[in-house]
Length: 120
Image 1 (cartoon, one colour):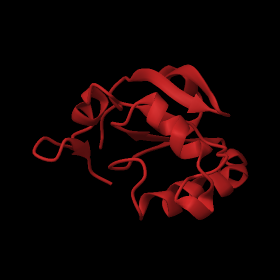
Image 2 (cartoon, one colour; image 1 turned 180 degrees about the horizontal axis):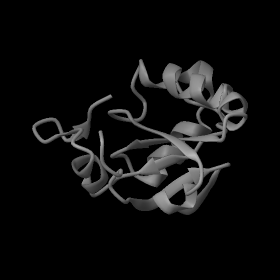
Image 3 (cartoon, one colour; image 1 turned 180 degrees about the vertical axis):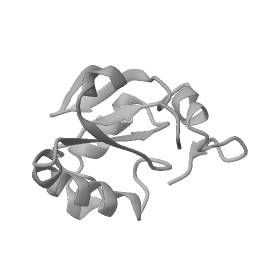
């Protein structure tokens, strides 16, 4: 708060594909950048799906949304490819960024060292 967000870059799953993504891709826009602990957990999908389902409302106010966890890009893709009725996300309209090295989570002060994942 009261200072620029730490720079990040990494691989995200966007529309079912792996793409490189970085903070500067969002220059000139607002960005909701949020963390969640792990893929295939019970509470996280409802929040991620809610952001995805309302992306047009965010875009209408010049805002993009990116979700980030310490899971790999492959785990993100598997979660997206799993139907919602089976605990998956299904198709998403927002990127899922992989923070496999945990550096982004650490830079933002949300990494729980003892648990090996980020706060929600």
